[in-house]
Image (tube, rainbow, N blue to C red; front, side):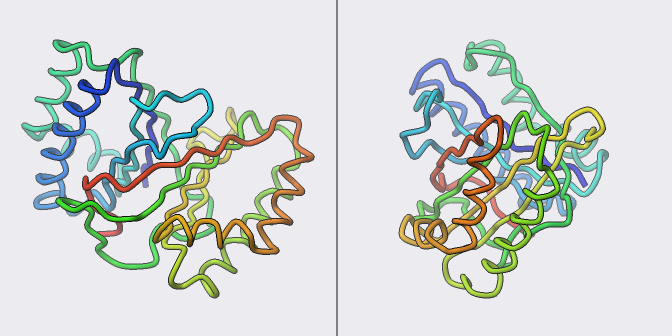
Length: 227
């Protein structure tokens, strides 16, 4: 499985909106004709993300394997049109970096099957929690995340839609951990963060040499989760 969670910095609000339009066209084709693309969603900034401009967008893409990503997904006409526009229209402020992630057997990608964002503006809140660089207490951190995920799956049925813990595919070189969270709305997110198990996780976070970065995003009407 290949998972990507790219952060894309656009040169302006207008170029961000152009990119979102192109991504929406890609999502239409992906949803209709790429069954091995298990999730494909793009989200807009909720604001208040320290060090990240409001022109940035965040993606979440899950492929069964390398061929599903490189041979099938990247061969579609809308994808090729987006890549061309990125270069010709100077949409990005810096080159796109795609770190390959993989599940580390903690948490769940999606509680529900076949959640489609495409063509609607919903209330879902997406969070990306990044532990980087993570060089110490990794085992303790993963255990705490496992407890949070188990609690969310069992007791936050109507609020926490995703809580998926990911690691870098080349983990021998990169021990960082990324957590993809998805909540029905802002109230559900805050209810999750106020649980006792999350408080225990925060205690471990406070002891880390480098504090984690958490960013917040909004459902943008592009894509789907858990085909």
